[in-house]
Amino acid sequence: MKNAIGVEIPAEIPGLGKLEPFQGAWTKLAKGWMDEAVSATPLKAKRAHLDKLRNSLEEAIERCEPHDGMTVSFHHHLRGGDGVCVRTIEILHKMGIKGITLASSSLTSAHDALVPYLQDGTITRVWSSGIRDRLGEAVTRGALDVPVMIHSHGGRVRAVVTGKIKIDLAVIAASAADCEGNATGAVGPSAFGSLGYAMVDAEYARNVVVVTDNLVPYPCTPISIQQIHVDHVVKVDSIGDPKKIATGTTRITKSPLDLLIAEVASRVIEHSGYMVPGFSFQVGAGGASLAVAKFLRRTMRERGVKGGFALGGVTSYVVEMLEEGLFDAVFDVQSFDALVSGSLAKDPRHIEISGSMYANPFNCGSMTNKLDVVVLGALEVDEDFHVNVITGSDGMIRGASGGHCDTAAGARLTVVVCPAFRGRMPIIKKVTQNVVTPGESVDVVVTERGVAVNPAHEGLAERLSAAGLPVKDIVALRKEIEAITGAPRPIELTDRIVGLVEYRDGTIIDIIRQVKQR
Image 1 (cartoon, rainbow, N blue to C red):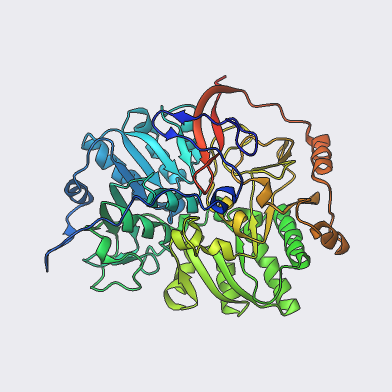
Image 2 (tube, rainbow, N blue to C red):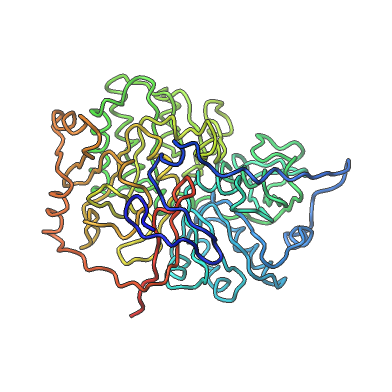
């Protein structure tokens, strides 16, 4: 069966069950049609003055009664510096546990060491927002029998609440915690900022282990993870390296090309009609995307515009805009550099939120639905404005869905920034390798060679052209780029499906096929 963007979707896949094709960004929710919330917060009882402290992570896991086929969840707020996920899987492997479903909010280069556990049957299924580096390459080459499920941050919450992901064990790294499991990422030597994604796991997991390298006297404040959800607490030497949060796509760029694109994108926002007093704003991961905040800050100062709130992955730039009074509040589900944690701990206007409040499509208050402007990155964009942020030009899984489709669906203006080409590979293509965000949710694509405006956004192209911006038809822009790079050769793929890209409402927007070995 074909979905709304013309991708053939299998009716069912062994290990994942029946599939529902993508129908449109808001079609399913507009019909009021959603899955039942079959998961509930587990009931747990604990007698007074019993100790939750365990001598080791091994002891804590043993008390959670690990078993074959269990689902284990992690959060990725430490990104490239995470030191807990691999350690936990190593322990489960030594215990002889097989058939694990790995349900991490995302997977980075810090998790390359998991590859052998995919190959030996310790891990047999993966649900995640993103998979990168060696792990992504191994999956794309067919390391798992069951395709990985790529979901958005909001879609992950929906999957947990509806029981598609049933967490047996949540292991939560915290930069400070007390003996009862009250925990935070905002203070301590390893402070990394928000614990937004872990909040949902703590609430719904059957067993919750908090791991910290900074055990503090009771009570630990501020409280991000509440003791009412936590079964065991473990003190370790290190939970990881917060300095490695701001690497890769979360590093503030110094590239002249990225800065040029960011400056043009800032001008697009300025003249879009949406940069008005009280407007809300988010930047996504990616060098040029993050850099837009730098130029927007200058523009807001010059024009005397004060925004309402900033949202999402929060950088030092956004914190400085809060401190300068350019926004009234910042809502933080994930901190993109460790320096943000100081603001989170001390400034009441810097508010930590859960993944559910951020982007869950199955509640009536996700903040992505309040966004006026979002700026997002892309690995590829096609003539229909569909965006790929999951597979590279070689077909390998190397990126993350993140909050891309969540924010694009909710924002009044979605701006995608990307270079016209990387190396000799064009980024604006006739058809993208995969789709994460449908073109109907994308309004503008900004490159160094021109600005393409989705014709569905009435009047926007005229406003930007009147401001002197280089607006071009996206087909003409694609042909101009290909005149330089040449048309890319199709990637050779097998028929085997190695991944599914799930839209935020639980429908399948695309499939990822195995790259043919040479």
